[in-house]
Length: 88
Length: 178
Image (cartoon, rainbow over the protein chains, first blue to last red):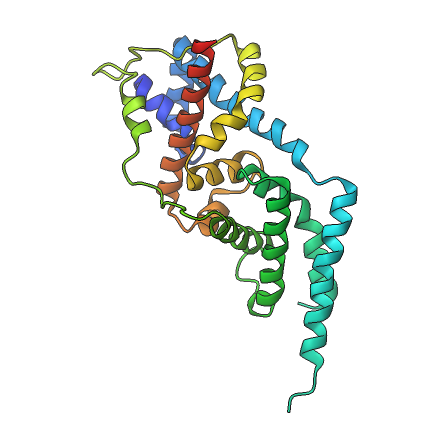
């Protein structure tokens, strides 16, 4: 049976997704029995959700998106013109 | 890549790139500047892109370097990290919690995390923060993140473990002070 330290480390490092079934199962059993590790695991998940939550507000609004996109696309056009210039 | 393909890439990734730059702690204007520079480099280097990796990996790799460039005095992640000691100190010698995680109940923790996580993210080291955001917000695979940050899978695991503990610790401290 893994220790609390091993369980919390494997959760926070995403190690479990790549682990074998034995490690995954023993971790699940540990979590069923240990409320501290369960709480830790919930908190780690909630932190990811919180980050997704706050960053969904930073998508550029349609006005600034349009402005930004057209200035980037201008670069494509000017780059294409440069390429088509005859080489001397 | 022809013009149409380039345009499609810009259209597909513009929002994500701006969001990732904001997530890295840049303000709106800086983030838009970084997005412009990222796509400028992408357009410039597109002829060399031979489909060796996913186009998104390529774009995010450029973005990551542009963010680093944008922020002067970027210090490479230290090999030793004081969060390791903080984590170790929570356990007794047998590996059981000696100081278990604190904080409000699960639902309340989520609410408080949303309010405070911005500040906690700002305080995290650059590379760890980007690893965390690429994983949690952009949902990139381990393989992709490793290519973008130029680290091994083991390194990435250590970074994620450090940044998540750092964020958890930061939230816990804020909660204890409140």
